[in-house]
Length: 229
Image: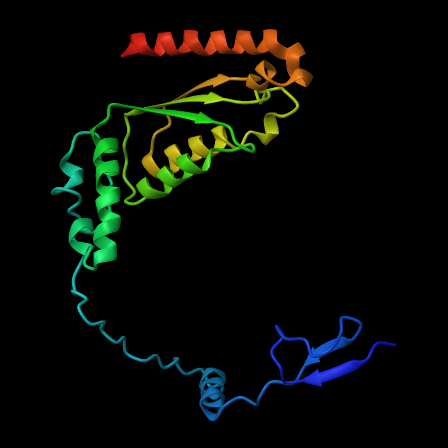
């Protein structure tokens, strides 16, 4: 039978080898203040909540919705901008340095009519560099419709609909969900070149013709999109 040890040490520091069964000591009895709250609840009294303590430097009133250089809501095609005054909110040197990186990325995104993204597939999803860009432009949330996002991808295998690896495509699904959920943009075109590894991997050499066909189809789709703009 395993040994049972009662201890007051935190659970992160086991006092015995893994062969022992280890249980914590009973908790301390509830305080008088806690029993008072329990009695008030049983008696049907309203809970007593402490008054909120104002934070130093916090301004009362509704948030100001002015954005990067004035009000982003007044810019064509930009709606539902709920961020407070972001530039003015950067007060410390670290915040100002972070805003200096973020502001040009947001201005570039807002000024674009079409956002073109080139992304290889890394481990079934986007590379770290693209994820870092996404994490920068995630704040503030805004509606960029009717802009169009075009994503050109290269995949080592084939993740097209109907293929065995289609459920593993967390690249296109992530980007579509992000553009629709964060920017309200559902007009997204993907130009996917599949089976790129057939160019270098002898085990996939038999799929080179399928890759060439996928690559040519992506180029044709890109030409059609270019004519639309």
